[in-house]
Amino acid sequence: MTPSPDTLSRTLDTVDLPFLPNHYRGKVRDNYDLPGDRRLIVASDRLSAFDRILCAVPFKGQVLTQTARWWFEQTADICANHVIDYPDANVLLCRRLTILPVEIVVRGYLAGTTGTSILTLYKAGERTMYGTTLPDGMRDNERLPTPIITPTSKEFDGGHDAPLTPDEILANGLLTVAQWDEIGSVALALFDRGQRMAAERGLILADTKYEFGVDADGRILLADEVHTPDSSRYWKAATYDARFERGERPDSFDKDVVRAWVAARCDPYRDPVPAIPDEMIARTSQVYIEAYETITGERFVPDMAGTTVLERVRERLAGFAG
Image 1 (cartoon, rainbow, N blue to C red):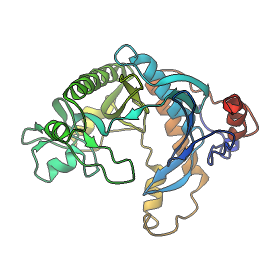
Image 2 (cartoon, rainbow, N blue to C red):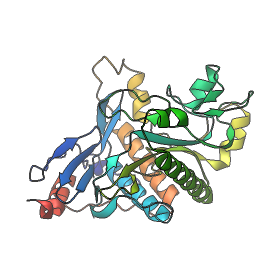
Image 3 (tube, one colour):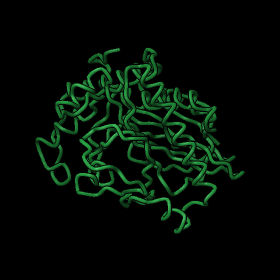
Image 4 (tube, rainbow, N blue to C red):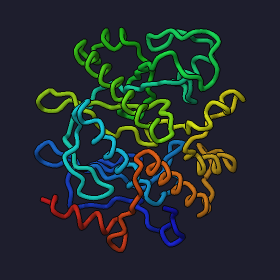
């Protein structure tokens, strides 16, 4: 599916559901805590970068919600998850969990750009990181000898995540030995399933992050999202070898169209952001849709009910009021 010009205004930017209780607004998602240890998570179409909201991308929220839904269903035999139902294409009804304070990132390749990525640390001369030692002589985006877990602290109040080793996780009481053993083995099993299924679609799942939480009964459940294009790095397998040999960045679902355009025109952390052209937003929307269709092998069908996305969501969530 290719977004048409008349869909550019069909975005869920501000989520305004005053009839629902206990609202928390994140950068791209709005959460409402309901009685009975339930939570509604509404995925907006907001695109966040440089610690600010840049624009709204048509169908982004639906793509992320439906991609995660597909993967939750494909991995339920490996790990139970927090899903209860999907009352709308942009909305997840789930169990409210106590999120564990460690974010689990599984990496299969020497890649990344952030300060906590193994490529950044490797290029700075480090070889032992996250409790794992990597060999000398590796190149950018090279496959690792075996996938590794690179856990970071999960800062809930806007702080910066920091690398952790398994010994630090246990010594600081962030997780028990049993919890670490469980989520470590589950994360590697999820990543293995993800890599194998991605390969069937002509994709390489290079790395991904997982969040886990504990329910009222003490069970560890998979939470947040799983193997979406926002939580994972996907490369196109057909061109990987040739581009790697040339020292080029692998082909990917490049969602950085808008980010790159903004960064080229201002200091995005300090300056006002110029008006982003419609064609940039449309291209970004198309990338998200292409990612959904390639990852799942299914055609993306936009939910066009209602005059606006917000009107549609309000109507479908009215039954949760009170």
